[in-house]
Length: 199
Image (cartoon, rainbow, N blue to C red; front, side, top):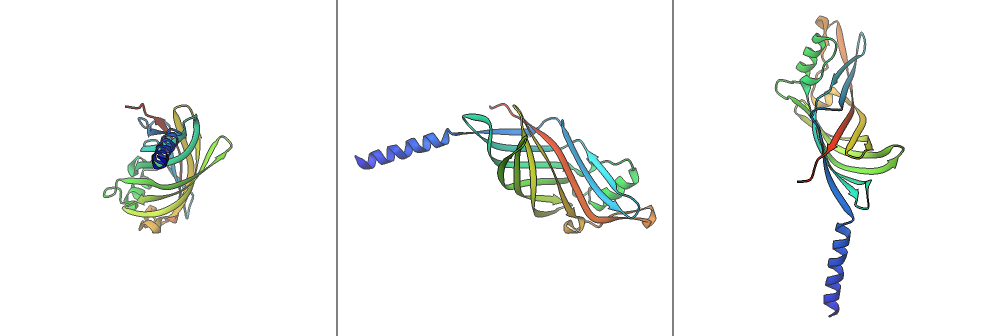
């Protein structure tokens, strides 16, 4: 009898704990509310490229009693087509695409591995570890992401600085070698994911 009561108690505990949280899926919607910028330096002046198209999906866990309370990030993906990055200089674009091997490796992508959440003013800070793929090379990275939780959207904001050489990318040069770019590259993002209807 005692054994049966213990089994029953265990089942009830599992049932209660499983109903304490809800899971929701979010996706980038029709390329809306996407701003991704890539910044670099050169021997003449700094340069910038920007994209407003991307794809991605996130699975998030919320407190069932307070669905605006985010408890964890189960998964997060983000994919950007290299040739969607544009500057105000077509020559710079062409050389950047060549350096990033865009014809062979069309996408820059990110996949979350783990995240530690903590509340901050206006939302949450996610201290993340993930995998960033550029030009066919994947590296493990650590990055802080700021999350703003709205009724049906999650907005991710942040930036990450890297060295192109870490991804076997040779910094491009322009104007017959008169202008050469630095190895450091910064990527910033402001991207909104929209909650998907269940079923």
